[in-house]
Image 1: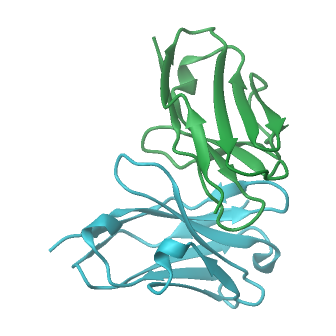
Image 2: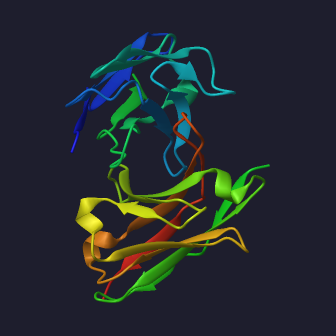
Length: 107
Length: 118
């Protein structure tokens, strides 16, 4: 099975900072890569799919890039409401594995 | 509007089974595959399996093979996830989630807490 890794596992940044989270697949996944945001006690929310397509209603400060095995989620200007754990997920084929998550908080 | 409404919290003893339901509304039930994902306390998201609501075909994560079953009722637009031989490590919030075409999981149920305790 393809394994998904994320780095860093956690980060602390100031409001307005640019934040970058990396996700790596152990094999190519044809850009079937999604990013989710999960706030404490809440249901995960789809942010980005096919590696770089912004889900409807998601603020434009979120962006995704990458292809093949290496992907990036960027928050261009961190806001207090972005405090959450972010997960990547491969969904080209089963198993639809999630990365271990990156916890983002405000410094 | 699309809604996935799950059944309520459950408390089970080790060795028992649990059946969690997920009622879909606001879209054509057979148009989208349904997945199950779980999250143990303080842990990440774990994909469990997928069901095709059209024909009931399934695919499960290897670690659950033999003790998981996903079914659906097309007449009521409900999918079910049964997990058997429960152990304390199965204590988690269980989510159903819809995948729409090339996107990821765009709608999620509210989650069902399953607690396994003697």
